Image 1 (tube, one colour):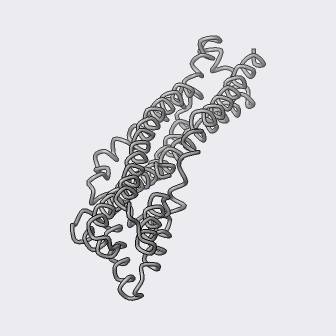
Image 2: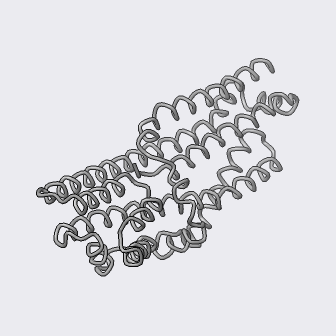
Image 3: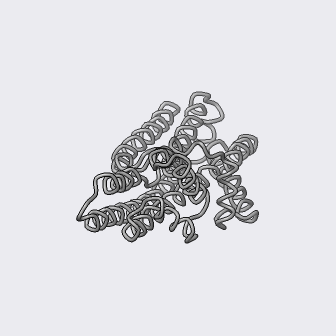
Length: 301
């Protein structure tokens, strides 16, 4: 009986590992190919700055929402682990560990929201600079028009002001463009700036057509990013739901063996208890890894 129990638990652990690996490779492939690691690009912003901006946008969790999340994590982990080990001490231990992950998940969420905010600002910047440039045929005047219109928010607004100052200080826009391209390394930013330089330096009789094509490219990218965002959010819900179900697969073992036999086995067999701990750790790792991927890799390129 102990050997059968061990094999069943081992089969569940192997199933979790194989499912998570295959799911991550197949389902997130299209995301990883089309998005970069946004935090690597924008790690110059501290978490304190990011959190402050999220609060300004009114998207930070309230104290009540944090309390609800803490309660759900503590209660959920206590219930699940009690079904595994029928031990209050073990359940309390796992509840404390689960609660410790709440700040980390809040951190990931803030990073994702900030990344989405920056991308939206970049969309506004490129679109409006193109429209201003079509009228003024001057990159600096286009920047001034966009800055003074108030359509941008910090930190992008301040960075546009820095571009204007650099342009006047150096007498050229080269340093301004280099500064902004390094700060926001999107290909739509680089291509837009390159188009402005080409029109300014070489001239173009069909500049209006080129600018219109660039605007259409931006619109297509934005549409793809938002569509990708919706698709990933939908999969994310399924990912979390199935992860929770995998925790409850121990109920299948108890159904097959009866609760009394199950309790006797986990009481007398250290190997089975260790395997059950391993199942919880592995599934939790993949859940956290999926959560990290979902929140860090947001639509950019």
